[in-house]
Image (tube, rainbow, N blue to C red; front, side, top):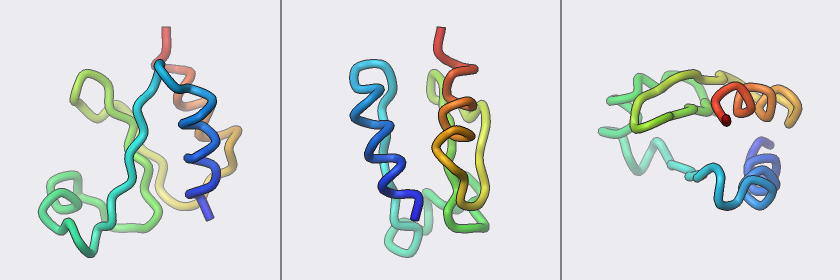
Amino acid sequence: MVAPIIDELARDYAGKVSFGKLNVDENPQTSGRFEIMSIPTILILKNGSEVDRIIGAAPRSVIEAKLQKFLG
């Protein structure tokens, strides 16, 4: 549900933002490290540290607004 939005944002923000997807079932150590309890969870990292997160499905406008806060 959120994957197509992330794919669009990755294209639109190429060179400005890096995007990645993680299967929590295949990567329990990483999901545990970031305390991911709900799917989907979008983490926004800046300089390697979490600065925000979105839990649950969100429209593009919400995700993009959160990203914009940390660009620039």
